[in-house]
Image 1 (spheres, rainbow, N blue to C red):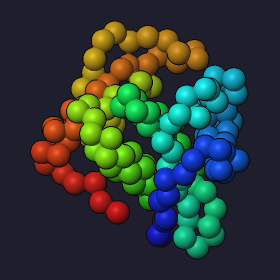
Image 2: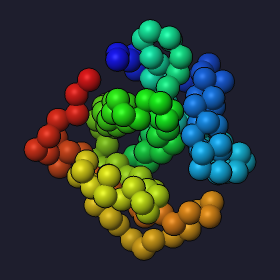
Image 3: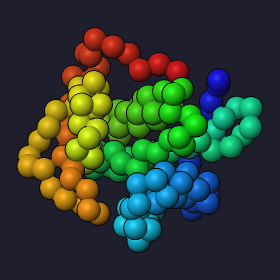
Image 4: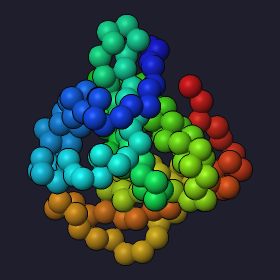
Length: 153
């Protein structure tokens, strides 16, 4: 399968971004809608991934100018295609364009090992958010560039 990755503005692409995030976070994860959509959306850099054949949105993610990566959502039918890697690669590219030294994510506790594969390390204590245990994880972009693997299209 092939996918197109676009950097989009919240004001123009909110319905498409919301569609993916509602299916993943609100329907699957049972995150309350008022928690899922916050004021940070208006200031974030968003990525939208679409299936090249159907043109349907299948994944999204965002990064803030502070380096916070969040709201990475991939529709269930596309998770086997490693679309999440494409989202991460795009978000890290934005981080480099912003000249950030470090990025971080508030990972669900069950995804900590997943993010370690991308050179993220745990930082601080586990905390609760929206009824889920989370762990702050951070990654130096210098370390990311020197990693022994490459995120590719």
